[in-house]
Image 1: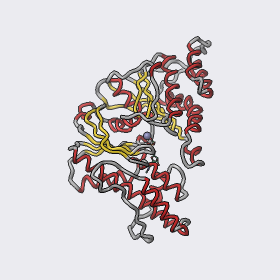
Image 2: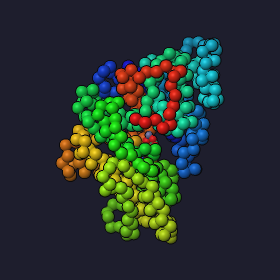
Image 3: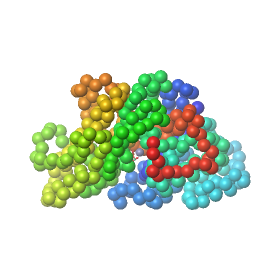
Image 4: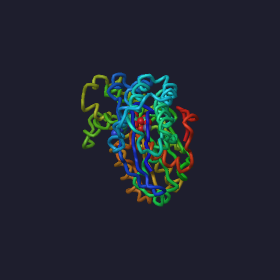
Length: 388
Ligand code: KG4
Ligand code: ZN
């Protein structure tokens, strides 16, 4: 079975294609194409939904074509088809996505229906205008080629991408599990009783961890997205002979619940840099500040996740979301589990599958399909605040 996953929930236009062995798991990646809009949003220091929507419109057909080609599923028709009456419905479905509409119609007239069994698309959480483009694109394909759609929750997708290389028996042996999803929009600790059975144990009360990296990077005049930039600067601190002695808070680290709060950390960085404004052009000061910001976030994330895993007797911890690409976070998690001699399996996706991608949506869609969550294209809607 071949599944194509589409994610346009934020600023990346992502399409991934996987092959699933029926009822076995162990997915094979056929293609994973991502068109990043980072250079556009860099100028503004964050993502503007309407600007991102326009870029998705421009990118989708290109990314789609590239993904099909890489997976060996792109075939030109022998004869270009005449405008059929199905096109009228597509014109209506994409009436608010003019750029995309014209590109897609040209594509459908030129190429044959690919051998894809299921289309999966992120319907939330995310930015509403961005989610709509991805969904309307997928609806058009579903209608035109008569391929079923399965909606996917973006957070579930970040969790389930961890199952890429496992079979069903192995996957079932990991439950109950605890997952930490850390991205630009979310910071949540989730108890997984089974696939589809989740309980949010705790989450951020204000900013997400990735958002905290992005905002503090901006204070330090570093480019968007801030997470990788802060990690890069922090890496320069090899020995802990710190010259500037910067000390930032670890918000809520000792609270009894599993919630987080990162806006206080951002404010602490703001006040500290206002006080030290003469140092802002000093590279060593910036590196030490980045190291401390990163460590503060890591300390809180690890402490709370391990506590949840112990309290709920989890057999595994699954990380996911853009921030889980952070090398130090990955290393220190492993070290902590080893140090405490915990009998907990620790999993984190390969780095390119931590940030938003279509593969995770395809995997998530496949599990939803097994639970009969296929829907008629006419009935699917987006929900920017969709809960797990
Ligand atoms: O999951 P994702 O791609 O998009 C959302 O769903 O939000 O996560 C993006 C976030 C950004 O805030 C970015 O700064 C952060 O992930 N990020 C990182 C790293 N790579 C991306 N944060 C820390 N270290 C990284 N290496
Ligand atoms: Zn994400």
